[in-house]
Amino acid sequence: LVHREEVEAGRDPLSPASLFRRLYAPDDLHPSRLGSYLAACVFFAALTGAHVEDSAAASRFRPSEAEHDRKMREKHGWEPGELDDAAAARLQSAAKAAVEARAARAGAAGEAPPSTSEGSALRTEL
Image 1: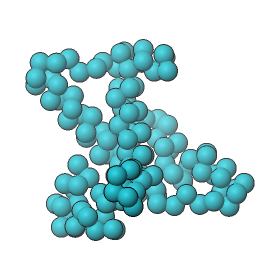
Image 2: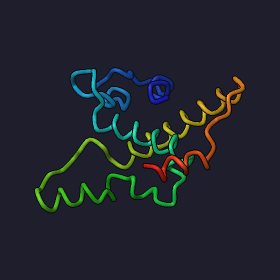
Image 3: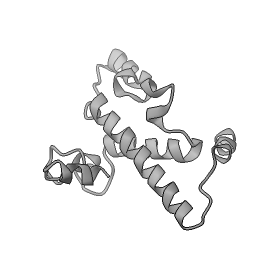
């Protein structure tokens, strides 16, 4: 979805400035902080049945509000960089769309998509 957004906006998805390219670390194999954030948003939605962008706690998933990042800045002067609120919002939307598309495909194939109660039971076990 991020790739398609870049293409539809007329941007080269492999340009170093593109959000799609920035999902990967410089080795092109591992996720960057952005890629890890996108994966976390997808996992959150898949496990809980809720979406980060719809969550009452959505601000806790914004880099500017991240407690860990704040502590690292205060204690060590470390600025995490790379993941700003605008990119986080785009990735939250992409995660929501991906999980919803997967649920729709599962429904069309006759599979039962995971229910919120199943996600809640799993969350309780975690």
